[in-house]
Structures are given as structure tokens and as C-alpha cells.
Length: 183
Image 1 (tube, rainbow, N blue to C red):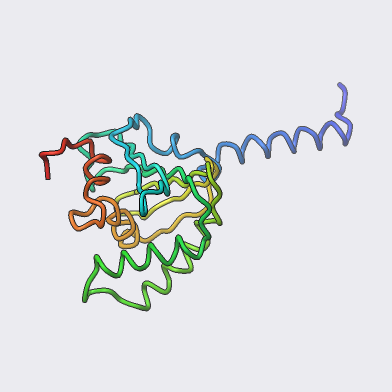
Image 2 (image 1 turned 90 degrees about the horizontal axis):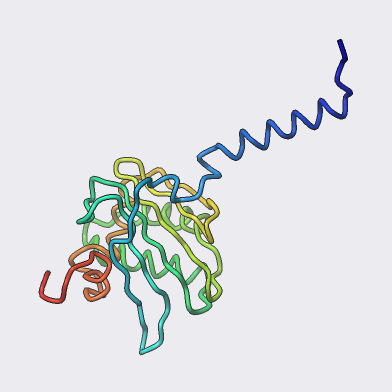
């Protein structure tokens, strides 16, 4: 019987730890969190004729259903600061929420989004995974960044693109895979 050397034992321990971490959901790519997801639709968000980002909506079901998980992928064409992303999101959530907006809750969401987002450079991707009843998970360039365990936040955040009252109804139609004549 041969005993393992301390170095060999340490190497096995490190290898086992790496395997365990690789299998952890916090390290998983968003696609493994949304099995069977297919591209539902895509479109560009432009501001004064300049493309800011391309948006893609992924879901295992079509039409997209708020009772099922889905992912929104944004591929940026411009530099944008984290502050700009957070403030624009808060402004839209405030606009869509109307009189029912709780400013204390928005302040908490501000902090959560600052953990989820980064300063953006052209070509970077942020993917938001909507999980009904649980909240949302955010990935930057495919790597897990932050989870927000608040279903109300998830609904308010993804409504920015998918609510009937979105500022960009054309992009909403494209994301949902609807033709021009559909609402």
C-alpha cells in the first residue's frame, strides 16, 4: 500500500474544489440557467440615429410569458458608464410605476444595479435573466455578476423593454417577434 505525498493530496484537493465551483450555479453561464432558450426576437436601440445597443430576447417559450423565465441580452455599441445605466433604468422604472413608486425601494434597487452593472465599452454584453417569483440574475460578457432576489425588481426592470408603455414600442415588437400590425 502506497501513501500519497502531501503535494499529490493537495493537488487532488484543489482539483476537486475547482470541479465543485465549476458546477455551482453562481458560476454557470446564463444559457445553462435557461435550457431550451431560443431567440424570440431582436432589434436595435438608437438615440438620435446612433445605435446604442442591439437587444435580443431569448426564451424557451414563444410568445414570451411573464410566468416563464427569459433572458434579455444587450450588446453595446457605445461607451456607457454604470451610473448612466443605473440612472436610465431607475428613471424608466419610476415612469412606468407612476404614483405607486416607492422611493426607498428604488434606492435599494439602485444599489443592487450598481453591483450588477459595469462601465460598458463597445462590444460588451449584459444579459439579464428574468426568473418569475424569484428575481433576476445578471451576466457581463457571459460571466455571472450579480443576482437580485426581488421579483418586483425583476418585473419593473424588464418592463422597461417589454411593457406596453415602453418608450420604444418598435423595439418591443421586434423583441417579441411581432409583426408591424400587431400591438
